[in-house]
Length: 110
Image 1 (cartoon, rainbow, N blue to C red):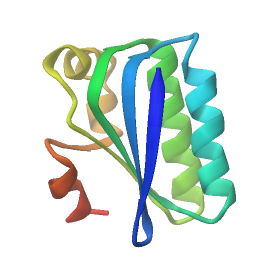
Image 2 (cartoon, rainbow, N blue to C red; image 1 turned 30 degrees about the vertical axis):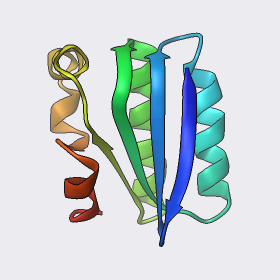
Image 3 (spheres, rainbow, N blue to C red; image 1 turned 135 degrees about the horizontal axis):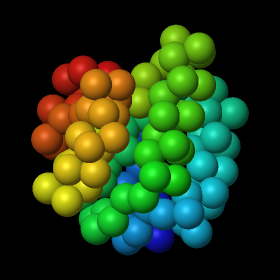
Image 4 (cartoon, rainbow, N blue to C red; image 1 turned 135 degrees about the vertical axis):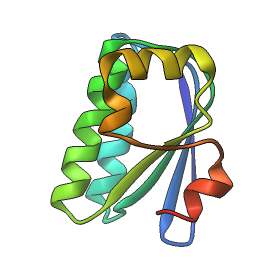
């Protein structure tokens, strides 16, 4: 798993590549928490290059969402492929997490 971080105004875009599972989630969690610790409370997680999402990855997304809500911030996920979206729907996370089909659409809602 790799994550490329880009700052666009007051929004941080994290483009995730590879598998987001129990082995890689702690690395991404540390990276995202570091972003939040520096005062950035608007984060877009771009899943375009993610081919696998485990429950550990979903826990990470939920944890980031809860932390940002307390700080009056927001996290949005975008570009989820069918397989990843199916896992999120089966877990019911589509009712909790804000998701959009593209990065451009995400910027309209952040």
